[in-house]
Image (cartoon, rainbow, N blue to C red):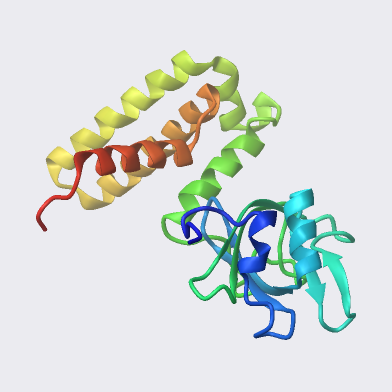
Length: 217
């Protein structure tokens, strides 16, 4: 039996139900960091093989009756992280890192004109920090902090943590939210400086949860 937790590989394509859709399977595309739904496309066996082999998401165009690599003309590529299939083997979930807007209208997603919302924006913030780190220090606070190095950033993390604690002690909800935002931003700077990200932190928290075992609700 196929491991449903494992990403799909080229050797597992025979397990998919190609017949149900006349050789085509719908593919839902999701940003692997922010988890924002980006688009829906269709794949035949050849386009899925091309996706897995190249690491660039490739679809089958029903209107042109041909393969098309997303971003081949616009440059807005979708870099593959993993492909999963559903329990029936007749739908795909494509996890990727988008380079630029996914929608042809210039928006991040075909489903909404906005970028990631909720907790997903924290992952997007890390990408913003990465981009701004390359700016001239005189033009960007992020770049200036990165230029000053991890020790100075660690100092700021400590300062922001104390300010959050003080806001919490006074019971000021608005101040707590603002100071928590400052702390998260500077933690993001520290992660960038030390070469890890929120996915690494989430993996560690998940490891601890699983190691602790089940607990009564």
